[in-house]
Length: 108
Image 1 (cartoon, one colour):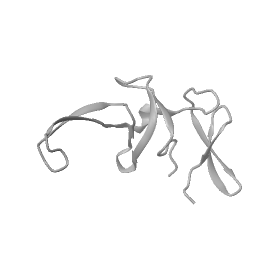
Image 2 (cartoon, helix red, strand yellow):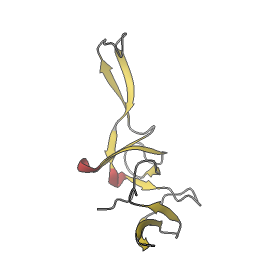
Image 3 (cartoon, helix red, strand yellow):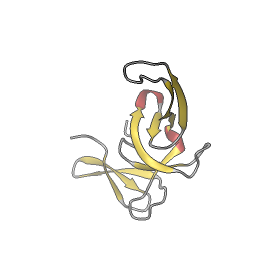
């Protein structure tokens, strides 16, 4: 099933503690309906010393948020927009509510 967002999209958070923030989608967790957005929902992770983190301590990382809490940004206006789908030239495209093409949904 096609999603209103995909990895690499610029999105705006529309609900939760980080409401109003914008960022780029790093990863889409399709099976859990969640996304990881750069700079949003930062959490502290406590790590013990290892080869990767010789000192151990606390590191900050981006945690997942529900996909329904983000909205793609319209490239022309820079505001959040709803998405509809159209078939053009045999490929399914995401179209912003204003009519701007957000690109094809598949990876061909």
